[in-house]
Image 1 (cartoon, one colour):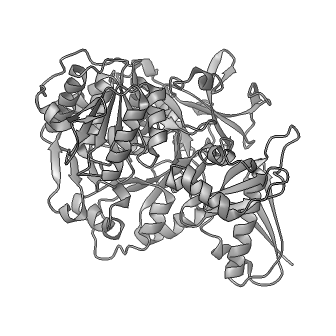
Image 2 (spheres, rainbow, N blue to C red; image 1 turned 90 degrees about the horizontal axis):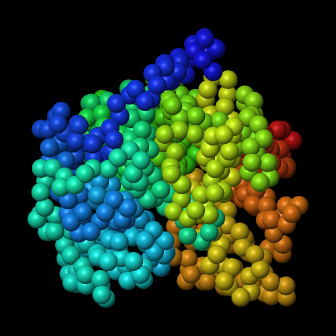
Image 3 (cartoon, rainbow, N blue to C red; image 1 turned 90 degrees about the vertical axis):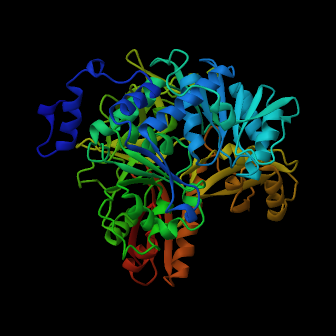
Length: 626
C-alpha cells in the first residue's frame, strides 16, 4: 500500500509510509546499544537519566544518576567483564531483581559480550539447564543480603551448569568465597578497579549478538532467542519514530515490570533513553514491591512520570487506588501488552484516571514491540495497533507443514508473519530455528505462532495464539513446563495444560490428565505430584481434571482448543450462577476471524447484567433470549 492508496483520514498509516519514504540505510542509527547511550550522554551529561528507590520507605530519598554517571557505570562494568574473560561471543547471565546493578549488567554485558536474562521464578534445576544450553561463562546474582532465595537458586544452578566459571554477587552479605570449585567475587568491588571514562576494547557492531532471552518453546525448557545489536537499536528507535508523542526528550518512564523481561528493558529502558528521557526504577520487586500499587499515584506525582508500561492485571489493581488528591498532570500514557486486554477495562480505567491506554503487540523474537496503537487519542479498542515502520507484518495462509500458500485478504485471519530489522537472529538450538522461518518469494519471514488479521485501515487484530502459551498476568508459561513433569507420573497416559480465563490474571494454568488404561488417578495425587515436580510456582495448575480421553485431531494430536472451550464454558456458567442469571444453553466455538466466541441463550434474566458480570474476560460473547 502506498500513500495514494490510503482511505481518506487514515493519517496514522500515512505517517508510517512517510517515515519509510526515507530508506532505512540513510538513517544514522547507532551501531550498538552502548553507542546509543554514549551519544545521549555526550549531549546532556548532567541531566538525570535514572532514579531508584528500593522500597517505599526510600521514596523521598531516591538514588539518582546523571547521564554522565549512568554511562560511567555501564562503561566500568563492560571493562570489568572484558577483563574477567567475557569476549564478544561469551555469555554472562544474570539472576537479579530490579536494581541499578541490573542495568549495569544488561548494558555492560551487551557491550563486552552477550548478556542473558534469567527469570528468578524458575527452579534451580531449570536455571542450571538454561545456563548449560547457553554455555554461560559467568553468572551475576543477587546475594543473600538482598534475596536469599535467589542466591540459593543461583549457587545451585551455577554448580549444576557445568559451564559457569565465575559467580559475581551483588550485595554480598554472607556470600561464600566459592560455590564448589566456582569462585564467588563481589560485583561492585570488582567493578571499582576498572576505568569508567572509556572502553578498553572495541565496542560491538550492529550484527554482533547482544542478548539471549528465554521464550516459550515446544520442549521442557524455554527456547533461547539470539538478538543482535541492530534488532534492539532499531526497535527502540522505531517505536519513537512512529509515536513521537509517546517517547520524547521529556519522557519520564516508570519501570515496574521485571528487568528479565524485554518490555522492561526496552520500552521503559533503552527506548526512553535513546530519546534523552529518564527512567524511574521503582522498587527492587517492581510492581510486586509491598505497598507500591497503593501509593502508585504518589510515585507518579513525585517523579512527574509521563509513561508506564504494564499488563491488564496491574491496571485492574490500580483501579483500587484513588487518584483524588494527586497531581497527575504529567502522566500521558500507559502502554499495555504481554496479555490480551479486556475491552471493558479500557473504558473503566480511562474514566477513573483520565489516562490514555495504548495496547500493542510484540514478542522476544521481534526485539519487543512489533505493533502499537497510535498515540494520538484514536486507538482501536481490542486492536494491537499498526505495524512499526520498516517492519513488515502480514497474515498468511500456511499449509499443514507451515509452508507459505498465500497472503490473506483484508480482514481474513491467518498466521502472523514478521520481516524486518528487529527480527531476531534465530535460536541457540539450530533445530528450533529451522521451524521458525517461512520462505516467501526468496525472503525469510518469522512465524510468530499467533493468528490475526489486518483490517482495511492497517490495524491488526489477534484471533488466537497457535503457540498455546498460557499468559498469566503478563508472564508467559510454556504448557510443556507443566505437562512434561506430569508425564513422568507412572499412571499418566496424557497431560495437557491450557489457560483458564481469569478476572485478575487474564489466564491461569489448568491441567487435564488422561490415566493409563486400567489405572486409577485422583486429583489429590496429581496435585501433590505437580507441587513436587513443577519448579516454577506460577506454572503449577490452579485446577486439575482427570478425564477418560483427551480430545484429539484427525491425526491423533491433542486438540487443546476443545479444552480451552470447556474452560470458557465453565467460567461463563460459574459467573452467571454467581450473578443469579439462569442459562438455557451455552456453546463455545473457535471462530476463524474472531477467536473464541461463547454463544449463550438465557433462560431468564437481563443480557446487560450478564455482559456486566463477564466484563473482565476477553473471549467474545453472543447472547440470545430464551
